[in-house]
Image (cartoon, rainbow, N blue to C red):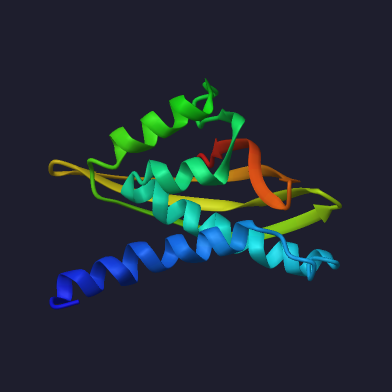
Amino acid sequence: MNSSGDFFVWKRVVVPLAVCLFSLWATPQDRTGRDAESRLLAVENVWNQAEAKGDTKALSMIFDDDLIYVDENGQLLTKSEFLAKAKSQSAYPQLLTTQAMSAQVYGDTAVVTGTYRIEQTKGKKRAQREGRFTDTWVRTHGTWVCVAAQSTPILR
């Protein structure tokens, strides 16, 4: 790596993606729900980074092919529709953060809940929104994938 730009790409893109991939695969250490909880919370954070950047390749690895996503407007999206939406929104600078996340593991199924905040700039217009989410994960063939997700805006 011969420039600070290359280092930035490694630090901001490649490393989180590697963490995501590592976190997705369950290990024999997942005997307690705590290991799975930690892995899922890490993947949720990587999901945010990938969505903010429009990284559909990383998002595609996180989602099951039969993903069902209910967005903030109540619209039902398939995996391909969600990926297209994430890619189109990434054209505008955005920051996506989650807070108060918790994971409950039930064998090969888990539910992650939390709150999120999105800050986005379109031209000179800046928008913020907050909401709550519920993501349902299933461990299949040793890998955690999100099969259902839902976002609800917090109205203030």
